[in-house]
Amino acid sequence: MAAAGLAHCLSHRPVPTILSWLLYRKNKSCYPRHYRAAICRELKVPLTIEEVPTRPIQPDEVRVDVHFCGVNFADILTCRGLYQESPSLPFTPGLELAGQVLEIGTNVNTVKEGDRVISVNNFSTMAEQCIVDQKKLWQIPDGISYQEAAALPVCYGTAILALEQRAQTKPGETVLVTAAAGATGLALIDVASNILQAKVIAAAGSDEKCQLALKRGAKAAVNYSQGNLKEELKRLTGGQGVDVVIDGVGGDVCLTALRSLAWEGRMVVIGFTGGSILSIPSNLLLLKNVSAMGVYWTRYQKENFPVFSRCMSSALQYYKEGSIRPHIGRVFKLEEINDAFEHVTQRKTTGKVILSVK
Ligand SMILES: NC(=O)c1ccc[n+]([C@@H]2O[C@H](COP(=O)([O-])OP(=O)(O)OC[C@H]3O[C@@H](n4cnc5c(N)ncnc54)[C@H](OP(=O)(O)O)[C@@H]3O)[C@@H](O)[C@H]2O)c1
Image (cartoon, rainbow, N blue to C red; front, side, top):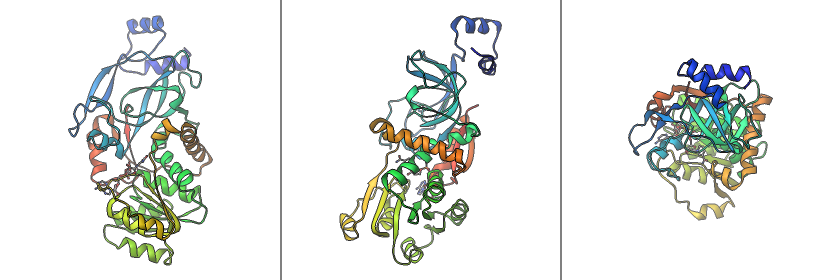
């Protein structure tokens, strides 16, 4: 192992002893045999932080030293048993990470020890170490910090997939983003405004959130906790309606958004933070020739990997070009995982919530 790799090894807890150094030389591997992980032992109860033993990696696997991981609404739903996938208990939540490669399997040729990487790996990343298939790793380009890199995969991957691949958003079109000051909402504003040259109307639950959405590139904003969303959208579009809706709230907000679509408009459903799932009245689709579709971002990893991978590479490329910048709202420590979840469920998020694992 190179000197840099050894220095990295020595920076880990527990402090290395002569014995561990000899073991390192003997085993040619260099990582703590136990690591801290957030564990969901029972649904709907607070998570615990536990020391768990490492396991050997398989030939195609990579052991990653996690620096930061993103907190997503999906993590909270999963730990409440309300997500579309239910990992068996106990499990470690977390869908995304940014970190450094600690060890590679014998078949791995995409990354090497010491590389800086991001990954999307369902239910595993809220821990000091994560084992990932080599296919699920992307190199972090120079100039992107681990913290910012951790904010890219789920939110920007979803935003790129929803706006580019699914809605086929064109320059000059109007895009309505709901929960617009949240993590995914701000990523949608960033991609729609700065990559696709669309005009974003942000809809969010407070004046402060609307201000943030405007600051991050939205052309107009509506506080749907107070104003009449339907009338405001009519006024803002001169009665034409919006071309694209990306909705993560569901319920009445989703229905109003659907009713506010323009001729041949497209609505992409990404989630249901409001807790209610709308049954779509199909006559609304017919009247204005509109389309309603869904996005389940991580599922693309399994069903259409080239598209998934292209979204990840695009997010990194857009960042490198200086076209997009994630907005990080709060950073919590791994031990503060329950506070981080509460922050999201209490509608306090403005931008991405990140867990610092170091
Ligand atoms: N389908 C996919 O592949 C995919 C991928 C990523 C994200 N998503 C979805 O995108 C949405 C946003 O996720 P996120 O992780 O970025 O979270 P977030 O937007 O940072 O936080 C959730 C936001 O939802 C809004 N909200 C409305 N009613 C709420 C309620 N009863 N409880 C809590 N929040 C409520 C709040 O904004 P306001 O106060 O402004 O209303 C809140 O800030 C979620 O529906 C999530 O499932 C889906």
